[in-house]
Image (cartoon, rainbow, N blue to C red):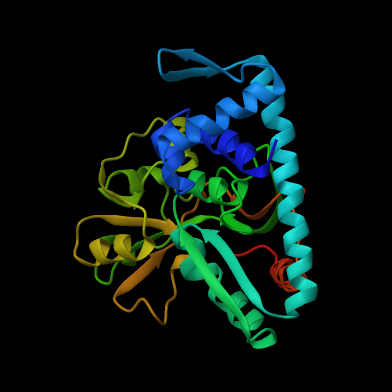
Length: 299
C-alpha cells in the first residue's frame, strides 16, 4: 500500500467514480489509475468498488470505510509537509484563499493588505467561485481558507467562524422615482423589476423566501453572480438593484442611490472556513487571527 494508491482511491471517489476525470487531476492515465486501484484491492483482499463491466458503479461498504481512513492518512501526510515547510522555509510560502466574488472584491482586500504588510514574502493566491465551489476548494485542500455566506457551515469536513453579519440593500439610479421616496416596503420594491444575484449566491434564497412570505412575486429582470455587474445594469435602467450592503459605497458608486427598506430583509452571516484537521502554518494562523479581529456586525 502506498500514498499514490490512496490518492487514486480518494480522487476517484471525489470525481463521482469517473476514472477519466480522476486521472486528469492526478496527471496520469486512466489505465494507470485503474491499475493502482486494482493493486490496492488485491493487497487489501476486498473490492472497494462495485463494477459494471469496465465502469465503476458504486463504492462497496469496505470501500467507504477504507476511504475514510485514507482521507485521514493523506490529511496527516499533508500536515507533516506543512509543518516541515514552516520550519524549513521560515516566513515564506503561499496563502491560498477561495472566495465568492462579493467576499473577494469587498471583504478581503483590506484584510489581505494588512496581512501582506506583515508578511511581504508570502505569495497570495485567490480562487473565486460560487459558495459550493468555495467549500469544495477548502475540503479538497486546494485552498486553506474559504470565504462565503452559504454552504460553508453545512459542510461536514469544514470548521467555520462567523466573521460578520450583513443584509441586502436597494440601489437605484440617481433620479429614479424610488430615490426620492424615503424608506420603502417590500410591496413597493416588488412593483419594480429587480436585478440581483443568482439563487446560489449572496443570500438570494432568503430574499425569495421573504417575498413569498409576504405574498409577493416580483419580476427578476436580471440575475448575476457579480455585484459590480448588477450595479452596472442598474445604472443602465434595467431594474432596481438588490445587492449585499457591503458592495455599495456612496463615494465610489456615483450615480447610484441607496434606498432604505422599512422592513429589512433577513440577515446573513459571512463565514471563513478551514478544513477540519489541517495544521495551519504560522502565517496562516496569523491571517485567521486578523480576519477574526476584524469580525463584527456590518450595516
